[in-house]
Image (cartoon, rainbow, N blue to C red; front, side, top):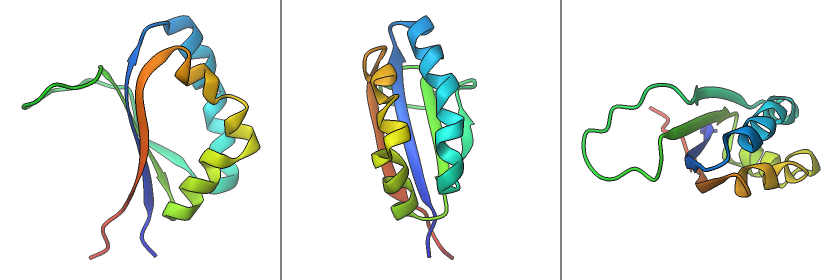
Length: 98
């Protein structure tokens, strides 16, 4: 089974509010086997126009685990902290299996 990766590209317009949201995300990941691969960090754009400077990649054991995390009561209780304090998107992509 291929892993699932939640990828987020964000432009934070209220850092304080976003920081409060971000502090609550890690405990919501644990029951679904999620772990951060990228959480902020330096960005070097080769081409194109990014939505914003904040990039996040979260690895899950499967796409279904990622979907279950996003739909979980724990994450749904805090998702407003992201949508109210940042513009951008989250998506899940299926990982490549060699």
